[in-house]
Image 1 (cartoon, rainbow, N blue to C red):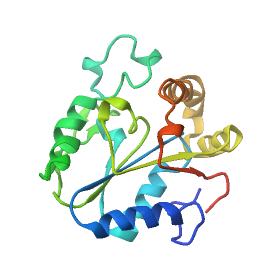
Image 2: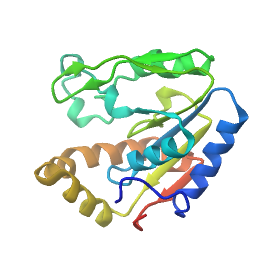
Image 3: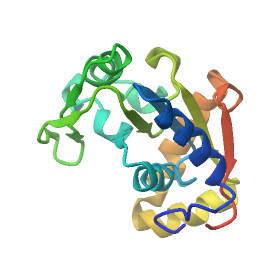
Image 4: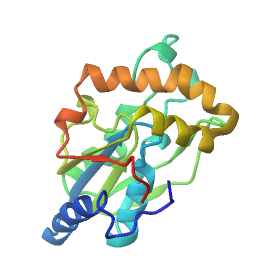
Length: 198
């Protein structure tokens, strides 16, 4: 999949219209992009940010540090996510019209990065797996991004190389369990199938 969607792409246009309408209303607006790994969540968020000039928060910045994870986290959907920190730093302040500040967590070296400010009264996008989890509350717009399993496998093999086997064995089954348990696609305002390349 290309890195950024062109504005006229059929899989991007309806999301851009809906997000632009929220941005033009003024005030705080939260858009959450969830979906299957390899479907294009990050590319979609980047395209929206390019078009609308909005901030993007990545769920990958909210993994729990390894020392705080439950021993069964590798078999429990979302057990590796720090929802409490995400709510405290980003979602709760923005929902009441206050600025947010967060420090992205890097799971590869188990460290936190520099603080990232988030302006109050603006459109903010939260993207990544588990962003539609019921524990995170409601949003102004929920977008679910999907693609068929064969397309997902091709993309992840190309993107992850040798790490593909870990996605196949662990991350995809956990993600699918989460999607089924909370019927995530059915709760979305917009569903995009990105089987066709932008």
